[in-house]
Image 1: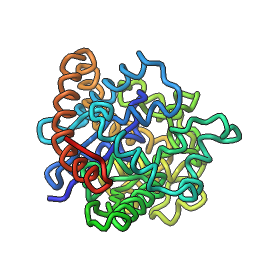
Image 2: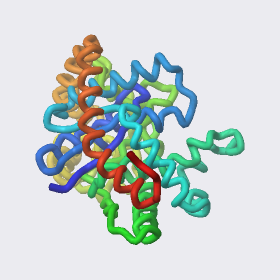
Image 3: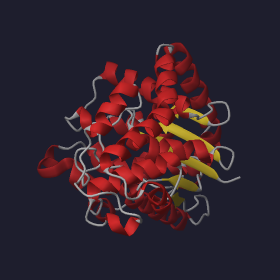
Length: 332
């Protein structure tokens, strides 16, 4: 069976974009692949994190994955720092990857901004660690959003160069999986900006822990335009807020945009928002309730992460032994 690796930043406040863009797809992939789902806490510290908040957020995000339907018995659910093979392989990849490759990574430029000289080396080398995350398990497929495709391409380049440098066929070239409608969910306040926990406005996003009243209020206040909904997706061009809300509705209903518009096209936004609220509450409500229950049991969450880490190491350790042998390290 093909193997999937996918990671999520454990920085708290899971929202609708995380759910529709990643987590629900992970749930759907269960049974089709051997799946490793990772809270990437090593990636998280490429920018400063308060230690207590990082621990709390790691547990909260793990609770969110389980509440959304990921079975930790059928899948490997763990936090990245449980398995030191990620860091070990990342260092080897630091010596395989070329500076020119990393200089082309647009996400570093966006995150570092005008202060790139003050950015951490970890933030710069982040893509090499991402490659190690995937290749430590010889993963064949990676569910990614559009903003991560460039990093996956780099992982493929690193895998190919390692194989060529050492005359082996050890690492596969992992393939991207981009699934479903609304893989990029936008802000409820600005249809041109990605939904993000860092947005100062709580009304820009629906958190997975929001209750029915909060969901209703946020959708009611979501930015729209004065025109009725079109009858087909082509009519959404130049209407970013309308396109975003229709995309959310379609994804929650598991329909294409055209299928959704065949049902609700012609509606005024007041009526559409009520329909969207009812749908969002029906899908997200049970997840939020279960997530809050799990967060109150950190002992259970920690046991899931510990067991998942042990299972992850059982896969990566023989692969790393082969890597060390090929590189020329003396091993026991």
